[in-house]
Structure formats: C-alpha cells, structure tokens
Length: 199
Length: 192
Image (tube, rainbow over all chains, first blue to last red; front, side, top):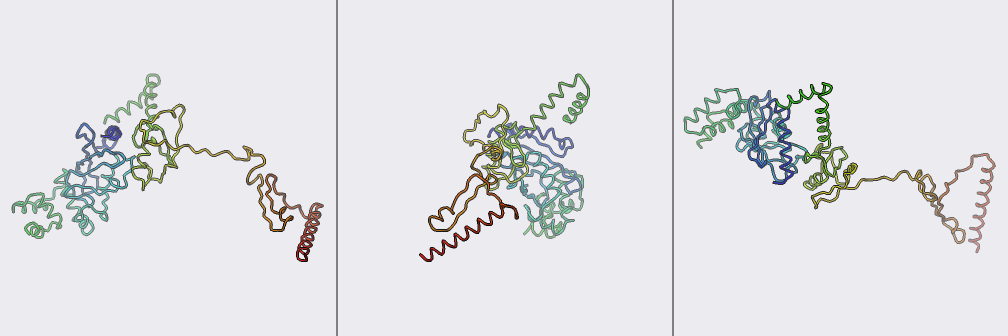
C-alpha cells in the first residue's frame, strides 16, 4: 500500500477515536487487518428517522490512491433506503464518487452517511423499488424501513403485522429474508408477494 | 471518554500557576503544529503552498490532487476553483532548501513579484502615462510632413493656456500664421 495512504489512515483513525461523535456513540471505526487497507465502520441511526436506535455496520476499503480517490464504502447491515441497495448495500452518494475531495476523512464520510440516512434523495436512487415506495407511499416506506432496522440493525420497534406476514411465507417454505424483501417490495400485500415468489 | 478526561486535566493544570506551565507549552506547540498541517496528508506541510481560498497543502500533495482530476480542479477543502498558476508558495526562513524526495513532481510554482510603481522607482526620460508619452501622425508632403509626424518622449504635453492671457493671444496669433502658411502651401501645390 502506498505510504501516503497508510500514513493518512493511521492519522484519521486516531482522529475518529478522539472525536466527540465517538464519545456520543454516533460513529465508530475498527481495524479489520493490520495494513489499514480495510476498516469496519459503524454509524448509529439518526434520531427522528425510521433508522433510530439501529446500528449500521459499514465495510470501508481504502484504495492505493487514497486520499486522492474516495474509499469504497458499502453497508454490511441490510437497510431499506432509496439511496442504498437493499440487496448489495451499495451506496449512491456523490462524495463517494465524483464529488470526493482529498481533505475529506473517515469521520466526514461516516457523518455524511449518517446525514444521508436522515435526508434521502429519491430522485437519485440506488434502489429503484425503495425509491418508488418512498415517493408514492411514504408511510409504507417508513414502516418498512423501521421494520428492517428492527430486524437487521437492532432497532427497538417491533412490527408484529410484518412479522406475521413473513412467518406465513416462511411456513410455505420461503427463506425469511427473501420473504421480507418480496413483502417490502409489494407494500406488504401478502397475495401479490406470494404470487411473485411462486411465479 | 478518554479525550474529554485529558481536556479537563489540561484546563485545571493551566489554571494552576507554577506546575502547569510545562504542559501548557506542550499543548501550544501541538496546536501550532496542527495549524500548519497539509490538508491532504495531514502531516506538517512540506514545500508549502496556499490556495487563493487560503487552504494550506504540501506542493507534492496538491500537485497529485490536481493531476488526479485534471478536468475538475477544485480545492480539496472548500471546492473553490483552483489551478497550478493560482497557488502561492510559502517561504519560511531556512526551510526553502529542503529537497523533495519525489523526483517526478515538478518544482512548485514560483512566487509572483509585482514591481513597485515606476514613478517612485524612476525611469528617467522614458515612461508611460504620467511621464508623458505622445505619438502623433500627420499627413503631408515632404519636407513639411516629415516634421508633422513625430514621437515625443519625455516632457508632458503642455495644456492650452488660459483664455485672455498674453500667452493665449500669442498662441492664437501663431496658429493663424501657420494656418495661412498651410493654405498658401496648398495653393502653391495646386498651381505648380
């Protein structure tokens, strides 16, 4: 790994650990290997959003050319958000692409991602299905996002209606996550989700 | 957390008179260092340059950033438009001779010096603007035309004399004499 990249990540790592956001448990960074090429980030779901109370784990890959090129970041925790793929966790955020600037750090990236959770951009979607739901049925989107936060990110809000519907599909022999994804895509309409799964 | 704990001890130690002095200077040194950190490598800036928007970088770092995106040259901190021509090098005392280990990086752009005002510096007999530079072209026939097309260096062009004075009257008379000479000359040309 290029010297400048490793040097900088080391410094940033110290900066994040000392930052006040860590003190507030809003963000966190851990090393995955000793060479500083791969890190594990964590952000808390922002308050007053469906993600509140959840903890979202991120995979951060630092390229050789860092900080001249952005780090590659992906959600490891499954999340229901217009700008994050519900399948792969890929993120659509300008600063991780062409709007990256060399003075940005791990800390600012994690804070930007946290800001993305509280302010979605449905007009520039990564997950078209989620974005459509967000635009056409905001209430349904919030229910779904809160449910996903509860199941995958340890959020406090249990939705028994969603759980019941998933259980019925699981009883039919469908894998749990597949059932949840299908129901989420069809606004929790059990009939249409079943139709899609068995077609 | 740990950081907040050290901060409180720092505050208490600086407020104490005798024993706290040592840690106080240490903290200040640390603060000074971070003020001159390059915004890209986060180390103390080497071959320091500063952008027009006031952000400090190592020249090798900034050069690499500009090379990475030649089509979108923006400040890494504030995204203001920047270019190689518009960064200013910082020359600290005794720090300019440091050699850059990265050979391929071109030397940082030179500082731009503007010469002081020529009026105060003094270029006797040749100057522009207030020192008087006049160029006039005339149309005429030899030998008279030769004299009407002249370059006047040096002395400022005198303004017209105020109306009613002796000089004004003399000038009026002279201009009339030359006007008649010109008319006679043209008449002679037509007759010849």
